[in-house]
Image 1 (tube, helix red, strand yellow):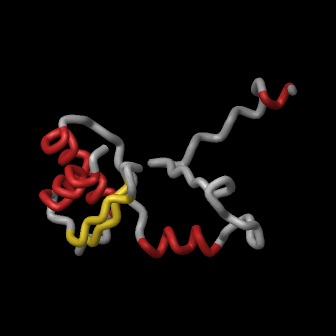
Image 2 (tube, one colour; image 1 turned 120 degrees about the horizontal axis):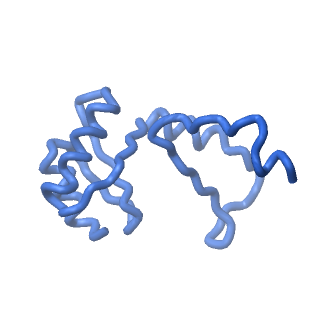
Image 3 (tube, helix red, strand yellow; image 1 turned 180 degrees about the vertical axis):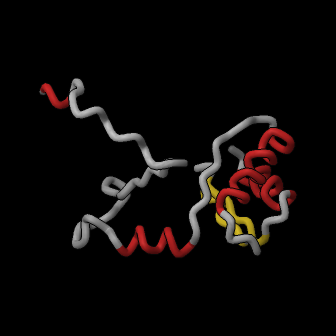
Length: 106
């Protein structure tokens, strides 16, 4: 995703200080709204109108992201280009696996 187009799309939705992160499709922005679901819905309507594609959008606050960084499960480990920490977010909590499944039989 081209960062300039992503930035323009988010700005057109009314968000301020929009900063795309590299070519990841992630964006940092400011919003007067604190309603994450409403922000997600607004952006999900913006993508097809401005960029021509649909995408699930997940919004996390600066406070939530900072708590994630602070909870680094690998404290003391060195992070570099060859060793780094990846995080995946879910729109909703994943459903638990059934008690009996393929993995429990291994």
